[in-house]
Image 1 (cartoon, rainbow over the protein chains, first blue to last red):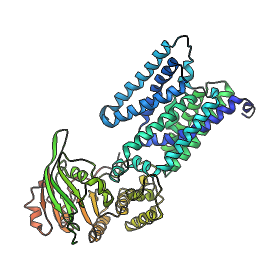
Image 2 (image 1 turned 90 degrees about the horizontal axis):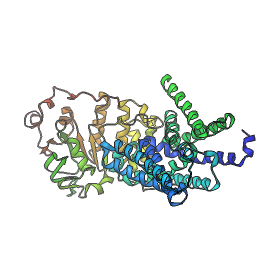
Image 3 (image 1 turned 30 degrees about the vertical axis):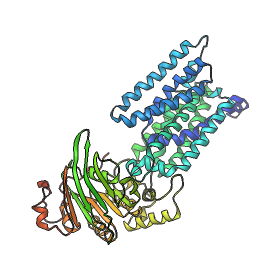
Image 4 (image 1 turned 120 degrees about the horizontal axis):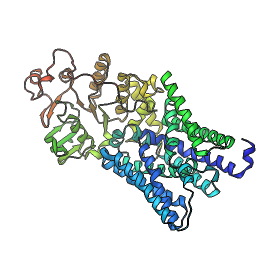
Length: 266
Length: 256
């Protein structure tokens, strides 16, 4: 591992792993306890539309992805509030429509040969300085929001009805959470790709929930697990020359199944 | 209780789900310091009535005043115990955190709970005998213990009106009577509204009774006798109990 660190791309990749883990662990917990994992999957895939659109218009793909992700996220959030009983079907539709938009716009982009695979499966080894700054900014925003609204987020996640009765602006917090989820998903796309995002968002919280007694501890533990999975996955991919995104997810998957077994035993 | 403002005032309140009327033309006035029992069959509109008073639902017609204010502005003064407390059983939340949640309406947005909030939550947990469990995860408690913690949360809000939706649905009989003694004690200072299937509770503790089956019949304080409960109510037959407190409907399952 240490000799790998002489390469700048490897140092960047490691930094990206840690930075991404902070938001991923915290937001992942809120995604899991508020049961919006499906929406996060939808955001990840639909954001491909933003990548296509950005390439077509000649702006930075990740800016396009971020903007489009937030828009689609809010749309899906709004639908699941207003049409609860069919929300999964509608989210599924937006999920695919977003991707289709992306594919068509990339087709239309003249002479641009985009590396589709890097968006689908991630390219943590190609993370540059500007993206590290973007990740840092998302982390700061996440920490700020969660620190400010921790007690309200806790009430909303655990007992929404009670939160409403006591005057917590539940709908506003919900859309704030979806916005943060969208930013987190976009930076996770860089690390593991849009197809695998959902695993990295949900596995660390799922494992953490078994071992923690408060939401805050669950977040902390998820961040640590996420760092562990990404670092270990990165090392394995370097050592055995494998795809980094898939290696990371498989490491997380092993952790997931170990925790399932432990859950059964205890 | 010389206060003229009534605790709860409903005037011709109607509400329907998807055009099916659930509550129709409900009017009553509840004095401060009263202890109201709400009776009625399942699907008769009991919980809907409570949600209207809490401001969780808006009436299609009519007006609701809680302590002279619209329900949404009266939140601070209401302690609320939901019917189901077995949601999110794996959720990482401690007994103390849940009790603290009762302070939510008093704390300000974007700031942590104050020292005073902590003290009040502590007192509430001691009152229901759950202080020793303060670090325990709520999902790992027994049904009765969990119910006590939810009651502590309602108490921590220092309510002027306590609204309880079937508070004894998952509680052991011993604590059940302790609990009603506690409500009786609290009722010396505050108004209590309770939804229950338990006729024994009605005859032993409440002062007024409202019977709802879409429309509501209100029996004010001092106007109830044991005979009325068994004879005059237009309530369903299965409410008639035999002797001591008796649960008419099966106990809710613990799974979810």
